[in-house]
Length: 141
Image (cartoon, rainbow, N blue to C red; front, side):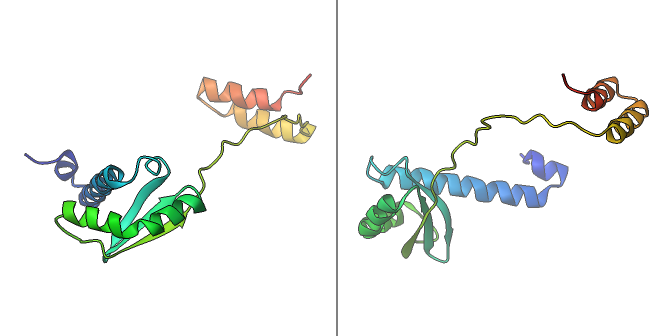
């Protein structure tokens, strides 16, 4: 049976999805090998030419990976049928923190800008979009 992407002719998308699935399987294998304390702090980024690139959330976890790299390589090579791992490279990438807006500043627009926005809104056939543009042009109280 053909994959939906193949039926639709998305050959590159199908290749990309195959690559993603391989990375997911590799990461699942890595997670099973890692000590429990490292599992939520280390993920697989790629495996190219025998070099496994991992991402750690901080330098401490990266150092732990370096010290246990030989055991990780041995465990992965016992599990992986192709592309044996020769070395591990670890990149430190802290998790992104959510950005919070502490205070919104109200800014007034000039009368000519408001007139221009109203004129543009008048040409719109989509009622919802037109109302949004008109609201932009109104002075705030």
